[in-house]
Length: 212
Ligand SMILES: Cc1cc2nc3c(=O)[nH]c(=O)nc-3n(C[C@H](O)[C@H](O)[C@H](O)COP(=O)(O)O)c2cc1C
Image (cartoon, rainbow, N blue to C red; front, side, top):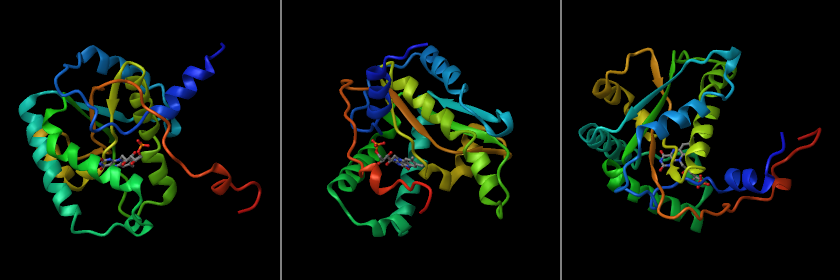
């Protein structure tokens, strides 16, 4: 099988976290979400566990309630200093904060909110290998889902903050206790499709061959 490298590389390098360019007014057909999840679950899982579960919320009243929880969570987080805050402000991080504020203000307007989940949660003292197996068995699928959306003209953004109020979301949506919510992905068609590769450090600064 020959791939069109120009196309596949463009897909892989231009799938961005989309917040300000989500089209709130264009409905997203359920079949598109279903097809993208069919593609996503081709991703690998630890021991072929396939314990992923996908909660999809397109009901406007429930989206509004999730948006309220999201805003409350972000308000809580503003009081906390994360380790990466010390990395310093750059034009890029300023843009991310501005864009995150826009999403926070408009979340209920996003037509579909997808909450990827895993059945079973790691123990509080879980070893790195167990954590890796749990989250590593859903994150590749989530990224495939986002790539499949992008190739169909839709955008998304991986968000994690809702997990700080996982219980409230579980109660709202009837998600059982043994199901771990790993993210909340707002999904919509994008306003335009011309996204660019992001600025990243040269890989020579982050690669180590044979010795650290
Ligand atoms: C594990 C993870 C957690 C994230 N959590 C959030 C979040 O809670 N809210 C948000 O707006 N974006 C979140 N993002 C999106 C990042 O801010 C975004 O991917 C990053 O700024 C790089 O932008 P790019 O994906 O367009 O290159 C998260 C991304 C990852 C991978």
